[in-house]
Length: 273
Ligand SMILES: [Fe+2]
Ligand SMILES: [Fe+2]
Image (tube, rainbow, N blue to C red; front, top):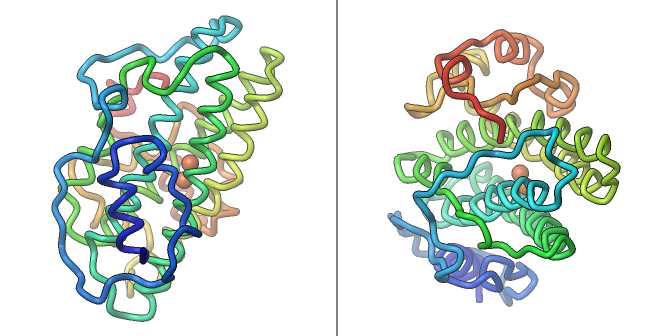
């Protein structure tokens, strides 16, 4: 098995075991020579993990003393990890890599997937401790739907690293505090692990888009390539953590503009996760 086979298994394999397949199972640490521009409409998912149209309200923070509400929150976070694994794996096979930079980026995405697999395992383990399993609540496809329209790896980085993972800096930090306030140190620790790794993941996007932005500012380039209907409003949570974005290497000017960005989504649509 090479890295292309591995990525294919993560996207198309249906069971959790496939999604969590370790990259060390690869006998060859290289991609197939033949690069195909794959279009995969839906990731493989066994019945209990299939996307659902049902929408559940994210639990209110003052209900986190109840195991079921806590599990619902963890389930939503786990869903994001599962989607991240599938979307990053799809990026490995969907977008071509010719230059040294593109090849290095692909290897960095491989190690990011390992982090996402670690996060998914941590959330599932905690869910199990609370008496729940992945698939006990509906799983939504919001992030996946954004993936299908992406044309380039640059658009992928703008959407994934600088938008979804950027927002998760705020969410993981915020919910770590909420779990701590409810005396759940175990879950708070998981959120801290995710938060620290997410800084690296945002840094990855910042690094490569900085290389490719040419004479534009990173902010202008980001806005230019961020595919509709995403806007920078999606790149932050209900509160904004500057420190982690600075640690991720985002320029001051970028952080300022993101902090001050007001979009329709933020005013009309933002619910708690
Ligand atoms: Fe993650
Ligand atoms: Fe991540």
